[in-house]
Image (cartoon, rainbow, N blue to C red):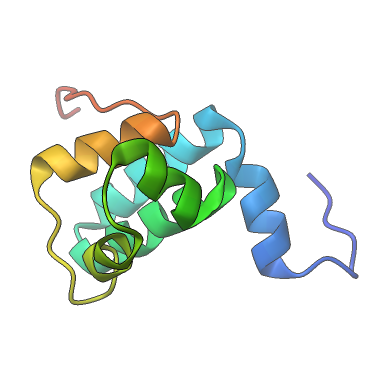
Amino acid sequence: MKVPPAVSHRDFLLKFLKDPEASAEYLNAALEAGDRKAFLIALKNVIDAHGGMTRIAKASKIHRVSLYKMLSGKGNPGFLNILLLLHHAGVGFKAVAKK
């Protein structure tokens, strides 16, 4: 996909991540890197692409401020919250065998 020079990286990323398949691949790459902070940043980007923090907070019934804290570099969201956020961002979670 060719990026026009006038489009910011962030705008391009958010447009790209609107596709649930692209979001899933992006999150999987962050998981494979094994860096919790990178995964939380990737999840925040996916949430931004799928309606933003306010929409996802309302849909998931998680207070918006709590959501920001969860997805900060120092955040530590629980597994159920991760599943809930993924669901509302249009992405699922599944385990696969290592190759």
